[in-house]
Length: 216
Image 1: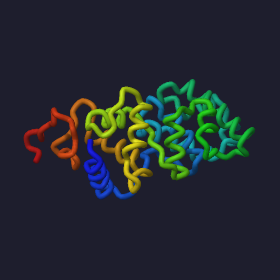
Image 2: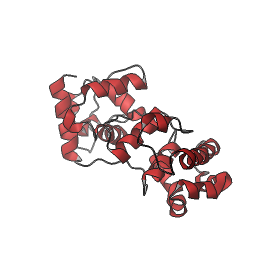
Image 3: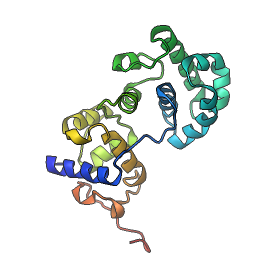
C-alpha cells in the first residue's frame, strides 16, 4: 500500500472515531495491566465480565496479593487458562511491590520481565497508559495488515515492524486501536464486511464481499 493510501486510510478511521480506546474496562494502570494479561486467548467482553467484580475489591498490587491466588481464581474462572493466569497475576503483583514500589513501570524491558507479560501486552500498556507510539499486533491486526496490504508480514513481529515504518505521525498513537476495532467489527476473519468498509477502495484485498440481500 502506498504512503498516500496509508495516510488516507488512517484519516478516514480517525474521522469516524477521533478518540479510539481499548474495550477493556479498568480504573488505573495496574488494573489495565491485569486486564491485558487476562485477555490472552480470551475476548475483551469475557474479561470485562470477570473483572467488574474483581476490580471493585482490587485496585493495587498489594490488594491482589492479599486476595491470593485461590481468591483470584474465583473471580476469573470463566476466562480461559485461568489457573495459569491467576498464578502470573499474583507473581507479577509481588514483583511490582518488591521492585517497583507498587507501580507499573513505563519501560518495555521491565514490563516484559513480569510473568505473563509478552511484547503485545507491554505494547498495549505502554500505548494506553503512557501514550507511547507502540503497535500491539493481535490476530485482528495481523490479519488486517496482510489482507489489506497495509503491513504485510509472516510473523507478528514483522507486521509490528512494518507498522512502525509505515504509520504516519499524526496517527501513530491511535493506530493499533483503530486497526483492532476495524478488524473486530468490519474486516472480520471469515467474512469481511467490505460492503460497509470505509477504506475498501484503498485495500488490496481482491475477494471483496458484497452486501447481503436486504442490506444497502
